[in-house]
Amino acid sequence: MVKYFVSYDLRNSRDYQKLYDELNKFKAVRVLESLYCFNYKDDQTEELRDHFSKFIGKDDGLIIIKSAFWAGRGLDNSPNDL
Image (cartoon, rainbow, N blue to C red; front, side, top):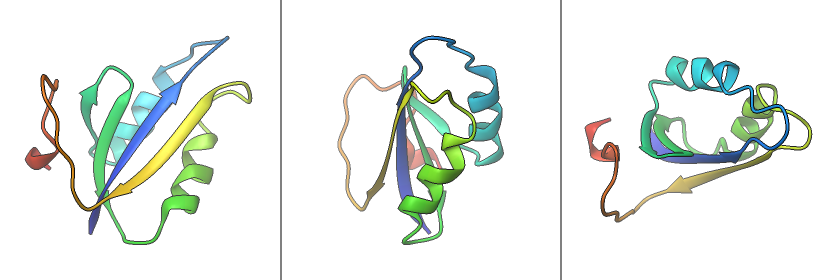
């Protein structure tokens, strides 16, 4: 298992609930306002992008980042809690 970060910009419709519900299924923790972290299988970055794209609009932004190391300050929750 590795840590993945997902960040998003919901632009026009701003229907967050579908995305939040899916992030909860992954047991993701909210790190910053539009940044979540979760543990998942290694080498799944593109699959995760495609998966989470189903829960946002076509005009929204999304990035999935596989991370081995991270550092933060003033976080809502720590990825170490996963």
